Image 1 (cartoon, helix red, strand yellow):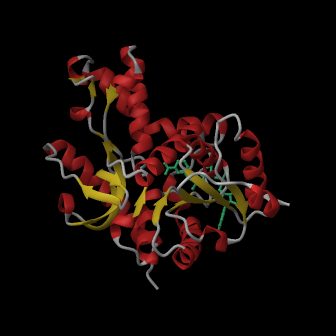
Image 2 (cartoon, rainbow, N blue to C red):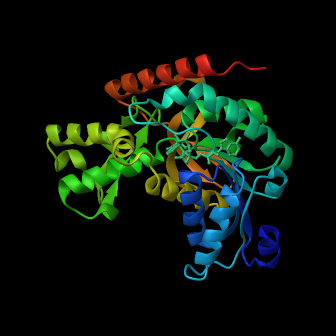
Length: 320
Ligand code: NAI
């Protein structure tokens, strides 16, 4: 039946994205991507009928969001063939009280098996990692895929940045649209919100907020994922929309400047680690890594973050 639905759908869009893992984050991301109306979407999950059900549900919403492309669900990896971008959300999610690193071992196994299929069916794609701990999983995916490093990147700190911006706007009582900011480092407890670079329509936040207010915002940004998980068990809307924004940056070659998890080869003085740093995200994935001149304190915080991700990666990943 689902095959029939697929055959009957017409496609007026140019691109094709596959999302591996049709759970809460994968399905939310799929629907947000459909709203951009630029790409067909294939959802893949090991749980029988889950991806098919999600796709059918979304197809029924498509007239309302004016999406004329294809959305389909499957458990068969061969259907991802032709995807320009593959997004991996497959794996276990945190339970209340867990750190992202607690998922590393189990999710590394899943990611390895997924990457094998991606490399087989989409050898030329860009590969975007979402599964946590995302910096470690980006490293695993880069090593296992054999792809050039620009083609394998992780969601990094874009979600953290969105949260940072949200809390700045709340504290100031101004439009969220006018807030700009950047978070670098681990997508986890040691993330580094760059206070010096955060602004409201170009005005540094340090001119508008007290030290105590800034500290509160930084602390809320760091705990925000856990705060949601404690309340409702999982994060969905914010990661979903971030994934769609990243996908749009890649498919339309928009060269957006975002803090993406990428494999470092000497940048910021570090190598052999995947971690969030500001990058230009475009058609080829990471088009460029932007090296900032960090002040001494921020440098120390970033070093701590790199050390933490490196340790977790070393514990998790043993090359074959
Ligand atoms: P979920 O449990 O709702 O969905 C995960 C899905 O992956 C399940 O449907 C499961 O059947 C599927 N899956 C497992 N192994 C698979 C395989 N080999 N092939 C295909 N599908 C497979 O979890 P949720 O909430 O969607 O989270 C997914 C991942 O994303 C978690 O690791 C979570 O921690 C992470 N995440 C990362 C964020 C980030 O900023 N990087 C933000 C939010 C979540």
